[in-house]
Length: 292
Image (cartoon, rainbow, N blue to C red; front, side, top):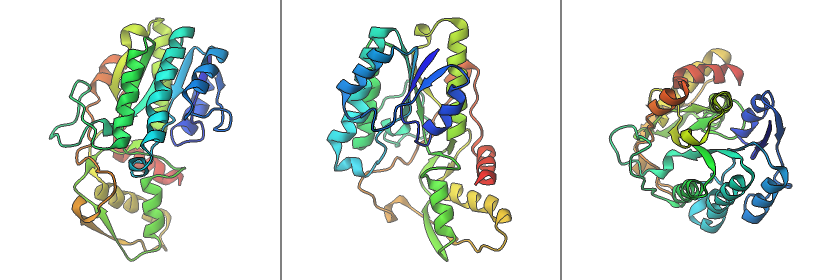
């Protein structure tokens, strides 16, 4: 089974590479070999390689920078995803694509379901939603997994940034009114591999095509995430004096792009369809902290 993996050096892609290699031949082009801002190149590569699966965790994820680079965000998150879908349709491939909670505006009071109306509040979310829609319209078999607050023991992410800064400062202000669930990149990778095996065993993907939510179980705030991360890390660094954390509202931490106050995702469809339950965020956090 040939699998084309994009973004293999990214946060999720680097976790996907070893688990996908257990399923078949993985082709993971570098940025130099595949320019995701060039939809024509993306489509050409798929037609040349003729993979059975295309796994696409790669994306333009600079949420604030996207406000000033809308064309680049759209090229990578929308137009190239649409090109993937058309090429996949042509060669009979299935696409497993990752999306985001930013397709919602975050104003809802309950965890978002896949059928809830979308309403992105910024360029990044709009580009990801357009990518979802282009993929769905392409005619290819596809599985879209929306996730949130992705982190891990490597790469650039909230946990590693907070721990690094907390070692240097006496106090830190952390937003406490945005709520979601941290999602371990390795859990996402294992989920993707499980889904591919599930589909292969049943030799049917098209009936399962659609959108699924895949985020850590439970919920917290960025403040709660940071506080728990430091609490778990302290025993590994008993001599380190970590910063005191101070909770603040979003209004005290303005950013170019508006952040959703509610990033919670209802993941029951994932469990009901594929029998996969995402890890509780506190359980995965304990594992990640021990790996740092």
